[in-house]
Length: 475
Image (cartoon, rainbow, N blue to C red; front, top):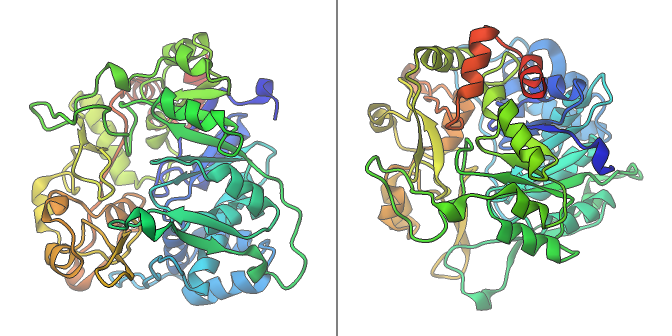
């Protein structure tokens, strides 16, 4: 794709399922890059089917999946006509390991295919998928499902995505891949652990010809961008440069880890990327984090950027996948001028700082966090670790403290303040797990610190849409 045809606006990938296919499709139909979130999309797919597949969208998409029996098996496993009875829990999905079972692989491939297929349905606009390098075990299977649906862009942040260009090359040719995985507590002499995938294992008939998508690496520094660009093996097709104001996970500050009086990380000049410095790397790039306004777009373009990535303004638009009550609660706070967004260094099990909106009823509030039974039953953010006997186990700092520390050898300090983002973010998208006694998992809302666009759009266009966001940015 030539640089002159690249989008000015990338709608940011927001998980879990906030940037779902409805939002991405709306943006792509208008000529910019709509991006679906691939984070935990296997869980989202399973829960949508258990809710009865409202509108029949998933079943319509899966009727086009090129391995029909695989799609049928997913539907047989999870689809409940009319939806599960209210108050009953969702059926569990197996958790990822270095050697995931065939059923979980099938669900992941099928779910990513369906999300991209629906986002691309009925128009010729381009669609991207956003993944997190930190959630590494599903990556090969998720990317393959997206490629089968014709994804045009893959975007990845939350870690160093150096392996992705080669991985996408191989997946596009249906060749085996092995993605290195970091194992906590492993010595360098142990060698790399890998999650392996051979697409040929899925096929009985000849597979279709696939087109390799563009790959945009999401980075927070010129240093990482320059290092990736310098090696043909790791060189992406472009970059998204996320600054500290961006929502979701943020890169930690460079240099000493210091907190201000409110407990937020202190970012300094080293954490600010100037567009002109990125331009010297020589690849297309989009600025993100505080650039979601007409002035931000103009400044990015003046510095040599191809455009900007915008998340927060889209997070609260009509088409986003955020549950309507949460969306309305945040918009009401924005209108009153008392919306508070903080960068919390402890909340995410990943160890990355995470933006949270201070909102009643969510686990951002200490009383809600303290009242939630501490458990880890989804495992999206589990990390592999080396056991004393040399085998590999899996643990999460948001699981029960005694399990993490005593049974799995983790440091108790790592558990302090950690929220179960897996359950919370599924709740944010309207897929809250319901447990015994009528308990439903509370949500958590994340967005960027710059709410200028949201305030403007909510005032001038109540119930504003993705089209309103683009008109505001591009006027």
